[in-house]
Length: 85
Image 1 (cartoon, rainbow, N blue to C red):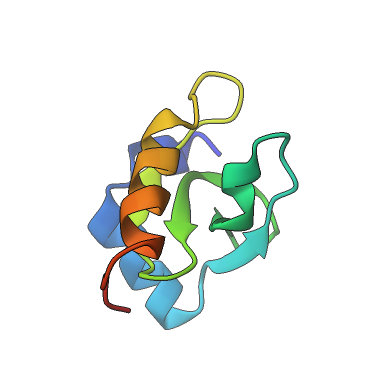
Image 2 (cartoon, rainbow, N blue to C red):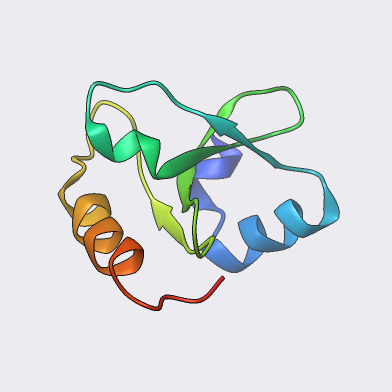
């Protein structure tokens, strides 16, 4: 996990496209988790990124220290507009 803390979004996006990383549903307390998916590595470890289920934009998110306000704002705009996949 330590190496993943320093990976930028372009590296994570490339790893997702190559199949090195995948998306996994996260069952958090916030309703925002119905609209976002956690990025996990090939060993099913959480990374510090989540992806919007509609447009697949990546957001930095570290469990335990990040809030969901930014994710909620994006979801409100994306799911209530013509945000493209």
